[in-house]
Image (cartoon, rainbow, N blue to C red; front, side, top):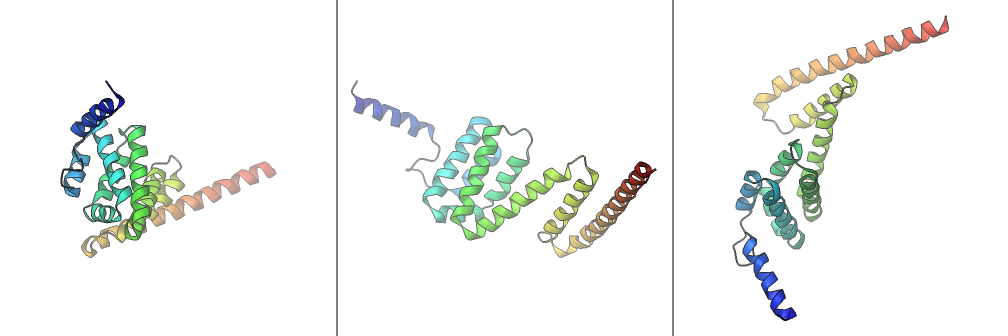
Length: 183
């Protein structure tokens, strides 16, 4: 076999394996649907396709953001069963989306902040956890319809009060410790 025939054979294998080759109509809805319904290596492949398509076309990125890809990627990142490679690919996808579109950059940054706050909300340190939950409520309030905002504000007020109480309690405990050491 010559080098040329080996290259052609290799290209054929890749093309036969790829669900989104250059001959197929690019359908962001299908890709996003496949991303949500797939797992393992297929999900990684779909993420790779998204990265590739978005890297060459800003319009593709914008279209995928409008189709709701950010929500899908965030759900995958939030899923604790996602492996490290999938999480890295999701992060790369978020980065490429934010680079290609100002609108998506704002959304990606928003989701990254939300993810970090969710992690902090799970903290064993009650003060950190409550502060993160409070900030989550503030950010989520901007996304929620007015009909649901009343309940959210009440919950946020409760968390704020609990946070203040915990901070005061911690200050009192620190003061007691200082007094005991001073004796």
